[in-house]
Length: 431
Image 1: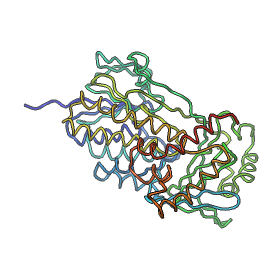
Image 2: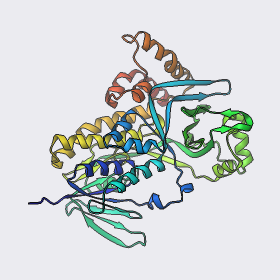
Image 3: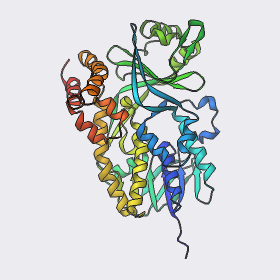
């Protein structure tokens, strides 16, 4: 007798939700419906698709490699990076990484995951619904309600519901409000504006390395982070303390260009007049960190990715940890023969400590005080050499552990607790 497929409803068509659909459909036991509040990205003008860059490191790439051909499809729209160049007015410091990473605009990553998904599976096992805003869920009846593009309400049933709907997750909001999910949301101190520059300027004889992430600091609280993209582009963010936006008082593109000329001279020569004008008008984005004490509700509802554990982007682990979630779910489904009543609590048990460790690593790896910033660079350079020469006495620095190993976040935090505690004290002590 043919066993009916379990119906899995995934809320959120971002990287975590789409990768989960890949893994579940690969198991050939599930029928998947995906709902997202945004329009179908395949129908958005390519010029409007720019978002922000993601660096896929060892954890994220391993998760993609679990599906045949998926990493290769993503890599077609990505750039391979081997490290970071930290620019200052006096010099450029090159920090090489042991492992290659892929940098890709988030919208390109989503499009690649979506195209592979729809190219592999038919409507009999997968259906996608865009412009659908999640409103309310009823865990007892196993239903979830939405508003469609015209504002009309509708409800659907599910066997399992996955909240993959990001840091401002409506699924998590419902679980916290109606089902006593212990959860804390706080704004990250930083805010940012997206920025898009050329990587080369032949007239000024400038060409930044295509296989490096490029960063620069302006004082204690402002920094520029840019990742190479195809077609000689750099996509990234100008990051600043949310209470003190250095661009807030500017009203003309000339003021933007003058600020960059004074504080970020290399990048001023890569900025067009058009980009300066658009940067002026571009909205400020605020980021939220999310801490939950569990990631499941009963036997039927699960939170993954940013919906469960959004963190500061300071060490580039948000998307990587989200993709790693999906690999863990697949491993647990193998271990428990697709018995979700065991998989869900096990996922919480394994991933909640990891998420809490990642929050500390994200909040306290990068210092803000001037003396610690000097020590930070010393550890990045001299400390790395000492570790290579005397590994039994000098441990790898936190950034090398996060980016170049697949140690768990709890292990990384344990190995780095001296540095993390020092940064945490510097941030809480009076200035």
